[in-house]
Length: 77
Image (cartoon, rainbow, N blue to C red; front, side, top):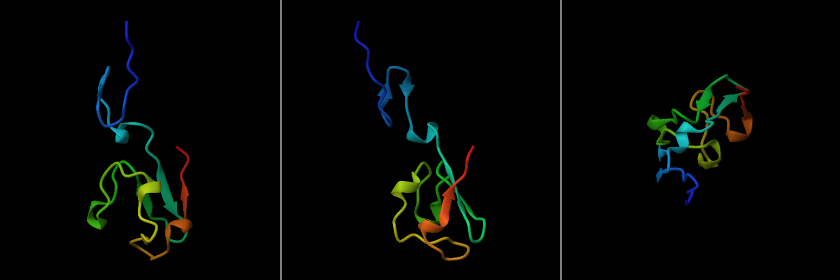
């Protein structure tokens, strides 16, 4: 018997896997309270749903107050 390790974004032994289905986080702007949700992304800013915070461009700015990524903290779920 051969076991396959599930691979994100492909069809694994348990069906289609999507990164957005696995432990997505939310990040809070400590200045204005805006929340970035990895599962939702920010399509109007060109950030697709399922985009991890680490993959949001370094130069991205809060759409409400203009601060950078360093002013966001991960919310505990």
